[in-house]
Image (cartoon, rainbow, N blue to C red):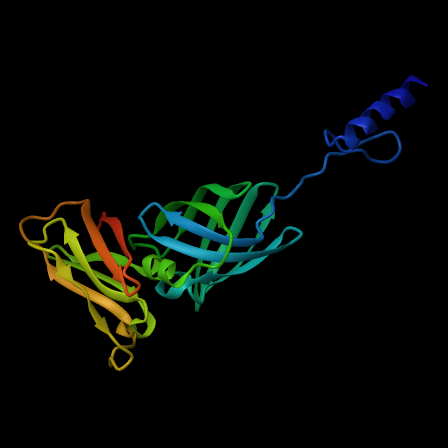
Length: 237
């Protein structure tokens, strides 16, 4: 009699979501998996930004990246177990594992493993759920990449297909004698890697030391502008 009463109490707790109730005289806990469906913005520790959409079925997760030169063309697979998210991004023959802890509409404690030996070999990141896919301007900003290939040079580029969105852009900062202006390289460029890019490359003055801090001023054709700050912490191998 006392056993039946105790079990009834347990099942009452189940009804208000406190514990799990099984059949017979025993119980087992169940794990509720986080909901990761939808669009996400990823902010990486090197200042880079990326966007992805995820679709979840049970514990399985699939998705894709957004924005040219950010994560466009990246396919995503993985799983979610409780609040633990484990993913892998694939682009061609390259795969990049990344993971994090889901907390409602945010992802915390993210880790990312990129190309070994590169400045993105090991990064941390956080994620924020978005109401919709990224806009064209958000993709332009996400595609911005600033790097130093040699001790005396800094380069930067961003994608803007057919120059539909950007009016002009400049970069200023560490060891640059003055603001440098981006040049648009269109579809006719013989170099595929430079097509549809706003591009700038400039020699550095003095004796550069890391971190190198830069600000890019992007002026869009709708008369709005955006300042984007990035730090370069190592040479690009």
